[in-house]
Amino acid sequence: MNRTQYWRVGLFAGSWLVWLSRRHRGNRPVALGERRADCHYAARPTLLIPGWGGQAGTYRGFIRWSTRQHLAHPALVVHVDHLGHRHWHGVWDGQATNPLVQVLFDHAWTRTYEPQIRWLTGVLSDLSRRYGVTSFNAIAHSWGGSALIHSVFAARSADHLPRLHQLLLLGAPVDESPRNAPPDAAFRRLATLKADLDHLRGGRVLNVYGTLGGRPTDGAVPVSQITPLRRVVARSPLAYREHEVVGIGHSRLHSARQMWGLMSQWLWLSTSD
Image 1: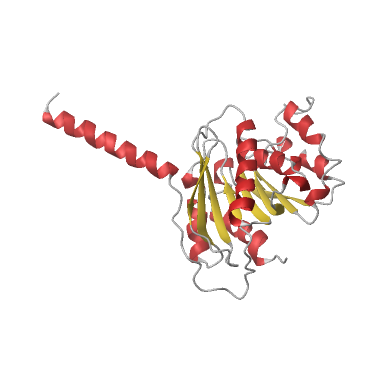
Image 2: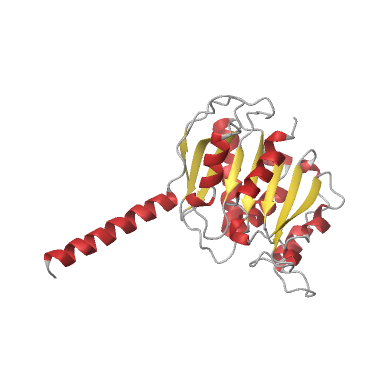
């Protein structure tokens, strides 16, 4: 291999390492800055949870946009490694500034979302123990939303986990069985919890799904896999709504500017304690 070939290989390897590090590097903490009169500010953090294969870039656009709009700001990043150990970075002083918490899974390509259920329960436990958090908001995409639903619904008051305040689910399948087939095992397990959801009293869920070309799918997840959640929460104290977004595909549910407006409206521009 001559010098030119060595240089090309080195350049390629260096570029690949930079790309890889950016996939795992969360947004740096940024102070809120000025406050808006039309925005509700609270000390309650909002978790940003990616779906299968999602990394730091999943919510990067939303974080930058909401910071520029003075709606919220990046405060903490938690990396969950392949062994499920959690590594926290960033600074948050507990003030009412709508802090954002990026959740990043180093092993983002798991075969199921079962590991994420355990990992997210650990993240919630850390928020309580390390930061004194008593309630939280979350935006969760795809399998990240599926995992969080299982984690939160299975929690009990005795678990000393923060209480769910507001949750935005973005294309999160809860029953991945084919249409008109019996529910899958994950949904059957979730359904067993529906009689014991009193710990979710006061919480709000907006279940968002996309449709493309007049078809009931966002191109990756059919609506029929998303809306069965209504059967679980039907008689619970949880406030539950569904929202269709037309023309938004699965991978754009977290990255389209239209979606950023919806997220902020739900979380900060029309809320109260």
